[in-house]
Image (cartoon, rainbow, N blue to C red):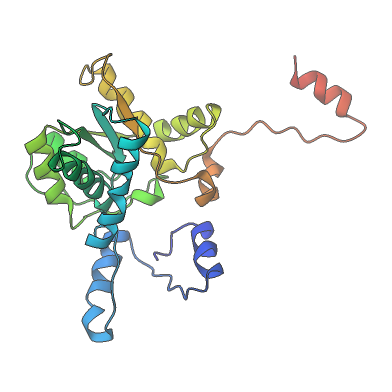
Length: 253
């Protein structure tokens, strides 16, 4: 895993017995390419976010949505996108439902990335056919920091073919959206919060109609990246038995 990955993810892996290599690399894409270059020499089975087996797992989200929505389909599904495996797998699931005759149309995807690292979204917005690589960037949305995704060109092509939308989220927008989700009971990591930012912008621009249904994919819980909370403004009053009455009065004024 890259050196910048949250400690919470490292703990979860090592608790289950994994041996973890923390790699000093600028982003996920650079690290993945280096590891892939070692696969043959060391007989490694590489399971990346855009691998075929991962996509097969991700497509279950489509089946679950179909079941939970009782066959009703959303018009759009907003997906935080990094290595592209999730959005590929999700769309694959709906294509299989369509091929089986269980649905009559395919929902359109919304490709969502952080503005500070938007190699796919930038390309779609500019009408480019290939990923526009990002490097030396920083975003609070750590889970979607692949600066040059190997599966990006395929997603750009699918977006063009199927009329998908694409939008990014600025850092302050991501943090604000994370708070909005929390107020509604959803504690998500910053990467998940990007979906709300993107859909807000697309609605404001008239790209999504008021009567259209949108599903936001919340891909990770907030406990996976507690370090990101340092950027959130918390209202905490340090109190004591001597000052508690005054502090309660102040808090509830």
